[in-house]
Amino acid sequence: MKGLVNKRFFIYLAMGLAITSLSAESGRDISFGLHFLAGGRYDNVRMCVGSEEGIKGGPIMEIYGDFRVPLGKRDYLSFNLPLMRPVLFASAFQMLQFEPQITYEHHFGPKEKPHYVAGAGLGSAFHYGPDYKSSPDNRGEDFFAWGPLISGFFGKEIPGKRNSWMPGIKVFSSPLFSGEYHTGIVAGAALELHLLY
Image (cartoon, rainbow, N blue to C red; front, side, top):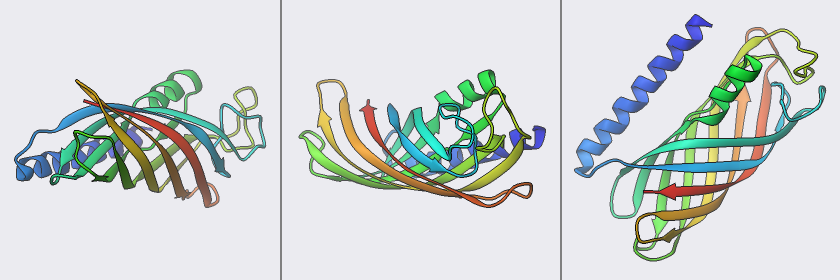
């Protein structure tokens, strides 16, 4: 588990340096926001705390902190840092499910008016815990798994006086690899609601 913490530190550091560098080059400030995700997924690797043992997948929810860097008038790069599941799973279930990613966004219209937004994300999915055959009451052996996370997003930004709202749909997929367990796949879809400051 100590090695896992060290890996997470270096990932945070690399992503933070990349975003800071992009912000400096753009000459504009980083903006912040939150977004909420709720949906479902197929998962033939990890235990789902919202499903019975033996079920491959289940519901998914997350709250993200967003750091957005403008790349031009209509393009942004957003670092999406998971806030809810890492804390909840570590404290309540002694598990790790951590899926940070960087999302490229293109806005099809001026920011002052409602307009559509499309994006694509790339990140990493980290798991430490039991497999899908387990439940909180019947827990199997813990193992570490990792894989690249790929996602797509389509939504609509609705500007307000002080901030903007952006509802949308996200699809995602991640192959998971482990030296202690078989290779598996995670795939799903969810509704998202972004609050942009």
